[in-house]
Amino acid sequence: MDTEKIKSDVSRFKEEFIRFFSSHNVEGIYFALENVEVYSEEFIEIYSKRPIKENTGGTGIKPGYWLFVMAKIFDAELLIESGVWKGQSAWLLRQVNPQATVHAFDINLRNLKYRDSTIRYHAMDWYEYPLVCDNPEQSIIFFDDHINQARRVQEAHCRGFKWIFFDDNVPPEQFHRVGIPPLPTIDMLYNSRLKDGDTITWDLQGTQHDFIFSLAEAEGAKKLIAHYYVFPTATCLTLVQLKQP
Image (cartoon, rainbow, N blue to C red; front, side, top):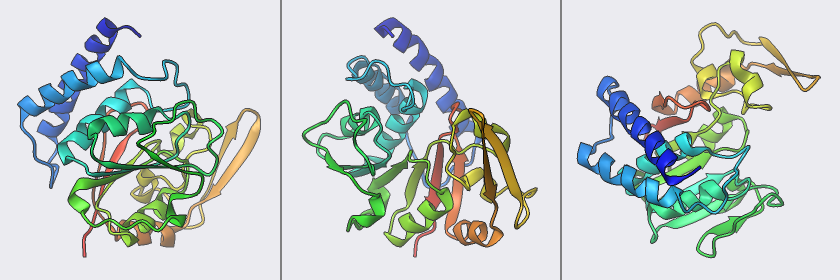
């Protein structure tokens, strides 16, 4: 992907970004349009220098753009990624703020292709690490780990976080697009068609997978969520705002 193609794509993403925030009543997020222009130009320059040119299975350019611009708007000082894969999205989060603390978690780092000396990598689940959020307004977590999103909501709330990004927040009819989805997804928590005990079945490369929906688990997570916003990306990148004490 050359720089001209990146510029063309970012021009479209920027228009979508502005339309999204113009048509949604997003609480707690404030920014000037000129800042989006600045952040978009920064993204073009940064993404052109990305360390991994082919990042199949990882964060692509569009969700990467949304994640980067939103993290810039939050002026994030603590950035956490759960689900490192090859290391590109952790690298991208580092570019948001060179002075920020960045943690990257994965239970197995064998797929890591790029390691940044300023990022703290951990071969473990993020919740096993003694990490507390002291500044919720300027801290974000990016979950791209295919782990139960209701569970991640409860963990992040317990640690004092306010802003969470989830990738692969797909509805049941789109499970096939992400392989093993992080069930239940945020979408499923608010799906009125799902009843307690419902079994969802899908096929992945000839193997059948089943998931039993728990209404109690869904309601427990929903009680902690103030708002959520699904961005217009193929992977349904979603921003979740947690309730604060």
